[in-house]
Structure formats: C-alpha cells, structure tokens
Length: 68
Image (cartoon, rainbow, N blue to C red; front, side, top):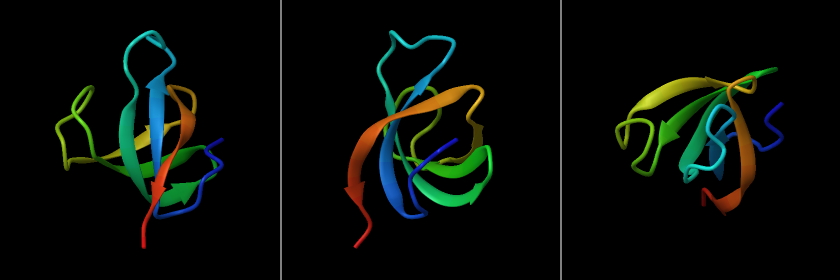
C-alpha cells in the first residue's frame, strides 16, 4: 500500500530489482493498491510519462518533496 497522499513526490523502487536506483514520481491519483504517477526522473520509464503502478511491483522509499 502506498501511504503518501495525492500530490506527494516520492521515491519508488522496483520489487524485482531493489538494487537499482529509485525513480522519483508525483502521485496523481490513488486506489487501494495502485497509484497513478507522473514520472519525474529517468530510469524505468520516460520522464513526464504517466503510469499506474502497483504495490505488488513497486515500494516507496521516502518522500522527496511536496506539491505547493
């Protein structure tokens, strides 16, 4: 479960490859086990793309910032 609110900027890691660098995302929407996220850093997805991410594949590392 993603514990951060809509608008939060967080770092996520992939459960399949936790040794790789986390990606920064902004949460746009939430449902119980998924978030709709705008990708803010390079890595798994193209920057500025939007994806639904599941908590079975991703986990949050920490908050990076908060939308003002």
